[in-house]
Image 1 (cartoon, helix red, strand yellow):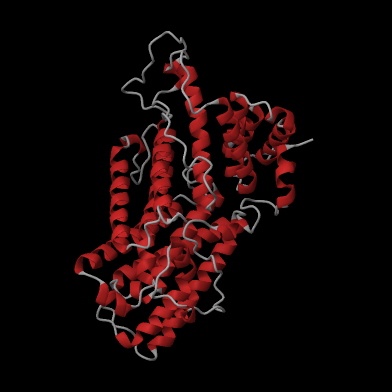
Image 2 (cartoon, helix red, strand yellow):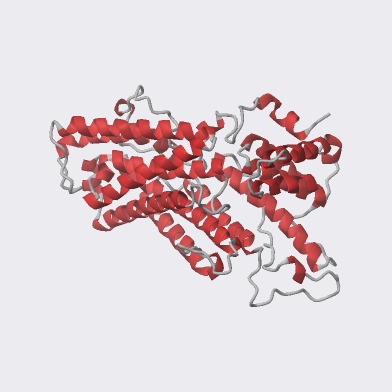
Length: 482
């Protein structure tokens, strides 16, 4: 465990050009840890083993090694279940109870992050709700099983706050995935328009309520730097706000796709005034979250940016790619583009340029997935520009949205379908989409904007720096089976 802690610590070591650089030290520490983590130890579960596996999974997650992380998280959860860490034990001290709760919650958090990022099934999807860790730091915990529980001083924000509130927020994200992206017909609400908008409104309320309930020291305000130079809570508030923006994209993009894949004639005839305002609200909410996310990441990049204000590079690449797909769908799909005023479209174009600049920076930093993201987004965007230039020679639609030239409806619908067909297939079927409208040879990868994950990134084997990993050797090589 100690070796993994040191390996994680190397990530935050200041750059040093001496003999023992951070990368060399980290490699030595992790090799030592993996040599000790053998089959004999794994088959004898203990609390320290689960904690070691959680730390190892965090390290692999930070390094962009999802396949290895996926395996280690699974082993950690099974070991934790075998120990009953999800259950409170009678006659244990507060410090023992909190250690068990925190360890189990770390397993739950990793399981949810893996599922949300790569669209893989949850191991703990139907597990009963368990008590969250208390908002109290280690030094205030009671060690006597017969003593009264300790309490955090009122004027002392607990360091563990970020972990607890992030775990609470992940519960909202899991409900969103079950409601919008589940394969189960009983849970998926995408097919019913009335249920769709009702669900979107409910999750928008829950996200807003969550953000209003978190303590002020975890609520992001820009610029946010305390006078004493302590950057712990500013870093955590920034990371939490990034998660919130990504969640808002998840909530609203379902309606975005629904609107983008409907012909203008159907949209105009079948939409009431209230539905129209709901559509416009979803469009504004999704695009605003995407632009804010891109701008926030862009402002925290560069040689002068503070360390630790962004998630790992590979994961931030995924977030920027997701935000970029929102912009490119709006800019390319006529049913969306035509209802926006010119100044809003100009703002999106600026954010689009910023998005590509951010991805190019991550490509320069050695994130292999960044190049694939850039190529895919540019392909879709450039195809959209060609479509618009071609159509403008034959008369462009009215920019007033509902007043658009209906003669261009079928052409506009075909263009929208080519951009969002695969996404649409993953979030529910629409009778307005037919195979004849899809251009199979458009050159756009089928999963260019998957509704729930980035499966095509899994095809790169690993997302972090370094060469590709052989999936057949991934498990045995890492765990160190002798």
